[in-house]
Image 1 (tube, one colour):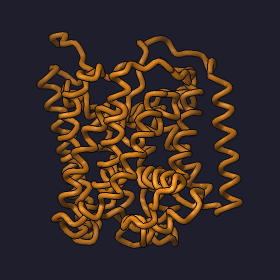
Image 2 (cartoon, rainbow, N blue to C red):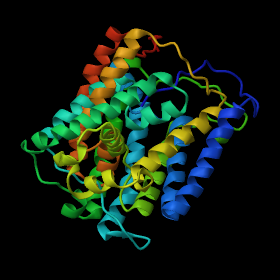
Image 3 (tube, rainbow, N blue to C red):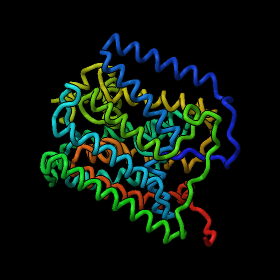
Length: 408
């Protein structure tokens, strides 16, 4: 995800100013959308839309990043963002594994996002990782920064959609490549042992970031202060750990309501496919869209698609959060090199996400809390892609954040 540029530390701002017009528009769209979905689909679909909005608020107010967190660790050895991700994952497995083992939650059948681990995940996750750094965000990061008023990320999102639908045309080739059968740690080991194993790995990764950060800087580096309101829980900013807890709980709410964990990018492929079909492309004849759930999604109205509904909720939730923070201010002048990076990065994000059976949310976050082996393979390969992407950023005039060595 993209980090939102942080102003220098100041005394807390008063409750206002906020940006009242975008705040009013966002709140109205969230309310009207929930009513519309409750009437045309179901109360459950309306609730998922509201969960999406809450995810957007959380992502924005906590500036909870995957892209920026990985970049500053790769380039500067700072690991606070990665440690927050480990907290999020730890809470996630504690919530998810017992429910997935039981097969139901509050009377609702539930299943994890468990996909094959193989060639397509290795290639797709690596491509996605490079795209994260060039595009300036991941899947959820693209949505929340678009909602927060980033015009550059609108370009990334459009390219993301195009890359996603192109990948669906190539999926038969990639799924024919060598891969393992879907593997669930929950089913293979049981909930208790699987939880213990994952918690050990999360702790080891967090501990490694501490060692690297202290070796690089001599101490744990404080994250840059962001301007705070007098009412930070309403107007932001939130601590990273608060964001980690909220994201894990909201993903669990998604599991309870939708019967499966949070995902993002399948909707992008669907939007692109419907757009191409409207232009006369025979999308329905493509193998990816010709049978099963994908064919049903292509034929159904978008308001019946859970991922679409939640994605739109994220955008409007982030818009409301940006307005509450007084930071909704789109910038319309974008350097050409940055536009090129947004297009190239977006295409890579979309193509890579389809190959890898998901993005940083559907494959990494939800894949790991589902106990899927492919989630861990995605993490390794996407991180490698981020290393290359971070090195490529300066060629496109994009910043690589580093702190000055004070000798402490």
